[in-house]
Image 1: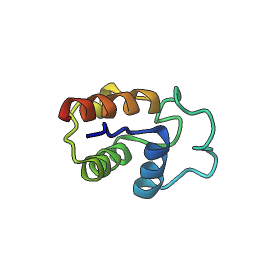
Image 2: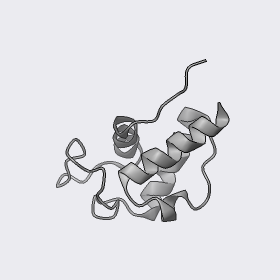
Image 3: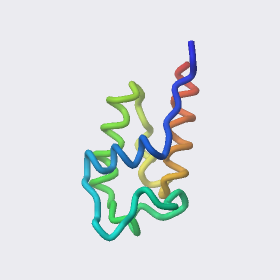
Length: 87
């Protein structure tokens, strides 16, 4: 069985689908280390994003995922760690 991976492309797609996009932010740019708040995503948008990630990837994220993983890189790493733990 191959290990499922979560990418920054998955994250940006889910962010755009669930919470929309700020027209002043280029999610296709170098955003990996940008704070979600600076990208226009506050806690409610990230809560929705986590819910969509959970449903699409069949995992349950910890309650502190939003508060402890404040950048796309950190979120991608957290989701991949959870995916690896479920294999």
